[in-house]
Image 1 (cartoon, rainbow, N blue to C red):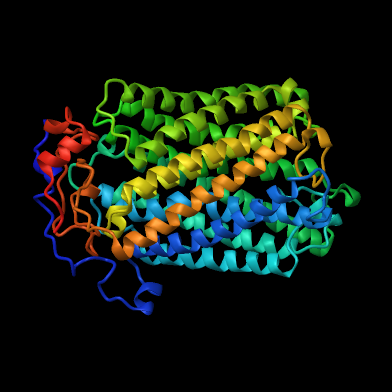
Image 2 (cartoon, rainbow, N blue to C red):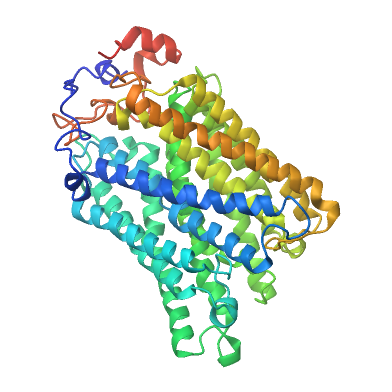
Length: 559
């Protein structure tokens, strides 16, 4: 049983309101030239939020256009640009960087007892690279955009498109180096900067998930960079690489693109799974069930993620034998994800569950990710894929995994660690209302799309048969509800910064190292180097108490 001081935070915490990373040396230059991982995380939070808003505007235009069967709001050419730009912004500039760049940047050094990441200057450089790549992409979108689809399939991207393919491709190419540098930084930090006593099997599962994600970032991102570079060479010099009209192979482009882009799905979802492991254990007041299995399942997902890219190409012309292999591997990759879901469920069993806002997002994640994962098995079956490829079934499946999964995990993590990031508490009432609205709005938006896809409605079309309008009306209504739900947190988060109550160092009564320092943390994270003498998720004497009782017994109100 661990020393209760690990929960009380009485050892390392010296509450000094002036000694925190937010106010020390506060000036514009101190932020733009900072090497503090926490400030860099805040810079990422602001910039990623701007891209999320931009991607959401494009999504709103898509749903408004599909409210009626005719293309009466957007012309077909404009609609092509809108859904392409929605996908590019959301995938490359929100979904991939959101959790690693914001929560990972902020929390990994705190969780392992380090003062910063291993390479602080490279960490700042990664943010500047992200900004340069994003700015170039936004400039291209404002000049006229791209109409190829976010996958840049040839020959659309090499021959038929007169849009700004080159500029957007260059923006994505530049942005890829941000992911590579972030992944490298995380791996070196986790290997070399853990506090005394922080063994590999005492690491929080959030750290394990980011370690696995970093491996994918480093190994996979160069492939998409090379692919975009080859695409540029073909457009500029008319070298026959992908375009069959000049001797190229369009199937080669798909192999290269999906060799990165399917592992990129796990760059998006693995960090979210790490967040959910924290939420489920901590709000059940119970040690996570099967810690080692969940940790190694993250590594297994990263490894198997590189072996299943061909299930995106069942109807592309690849051999039937290759399709059978990829179909089998697509079923196998579901196993480590299932391990996580079963272990989360076992952790909940007989736990002292507290239905605070982060836990609501955690439970909603499990439900939505389960639907997304099970429908992925449909797409891994070759016979069903012939019918479902390029229909709205694909759109629904992808959004259940990415939005229902990664975005809900991101919001859950942001609510969970908001007091540590800002030192302020948000409105629990409004945060629960927002979580429920998001859950309802999301399901109303995307569940009808499974039916639309089954009925054969193709994606990427601005018009559709009139008999499908009712389901599209439901989907657009759900998108409106979802937008309201996503807007509410913006209001109460901003309100909490200026008017929220001061947060105690450990408002959730938890044993992790990030809760053993002040809220917000000092510039160097800890006043003294922490020594870890407890196992991961070991709650000790208060494990039998629910959250409110634990708060009453162990935590004094913040001054």
